[in-house]
Length: 319
Image (cartoon, rainbow, N blue to C red; front, side, top):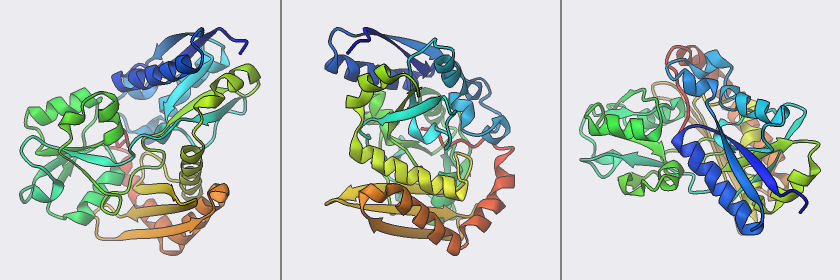
C-alpha cells in the first residue's frame, strides 16, 4: 500500500454518512495506518426533494456532485447506494468494488400494526417508490398509497405524527442507522421484490488511479457484485430506473444464480413476473435474458404507461 490518506466523497444525508463511515472502518480494518476523511456533499436530489427525479435527469442527480469531486481530485473514492447509481458511468470513472450486501428486503414500519396484512381497510401507506406502490396495490387494492419524501428520520416522524398508518422502507437503511427496533415485519421477496442493487454499497473511483483501486480491492464481495451486476443488466435492458415500477433481485444458492424480475402497472391489476437461473459467472447474460423474458410478457408497455405518472410525483426509490 503506497497511499496513506484517503478522502471519501459521500452524500450529506444521515444514512449516506453512516454508510461512508462503514466503508471507512472496513478500510481501516485492512490498513490500520491509513487515515480517511469524509467529504460530505449535498447533491441536487437532496436540495430538491419535491422535484421529480426524472426532471433532474434521473439517478445521476444522486451522484453527479460526488463524481465531480472525484474528477477534480477533491476526493479519492465515492460511496454510493447501488440502487441510486446510473447504469452508465463517465468514462474517466469506474466502479471496481461492491461490498458485501446487507439485507435487501423492504420492511413494514408501523406503530399499531405488525404486518401489511394486519392493516385495516383503506389504510394510508407512505412510500417514495413507484416500484413499491404498484406491488403493494397488487397485494391489496384497498390500501391508499401516498408519496413520502425525505430522509429516514423525516419519514419516521411523519408516521409518528399520524400522517400514515404505515410506511415502507428498505430494511438495510434502518439497520445501518441502528433503527431496527422500528421494523414491525419484513416483506418476503415473493410479496415485494426489492429494487435492483438494494442493500449494496458501491465504491467509485478514477479509472486511471491504480493505487486506489488496489487499495479498495479487498472490500469487493464477489457474490454481491455478481448479483448486483445481473440486476443492473436487467434495469439497463429495460430502461428502468428509480422512477419506474421495475423490481429485480438476484441471489446465489449452491453456486446457482437466480434472478427475478417484476413489473406491475399503477393500479396493481397487472403484475408480470419472470425468473431465470444459471451460472453466476454469466451474471450479465442472465440479466439480459430475464429482461427479454419480461419484454415478451409486455413489460415495456407497462413501463411506458407508467412514465407519464412519474414526472409530477417526485417518486424516488430511496430507502
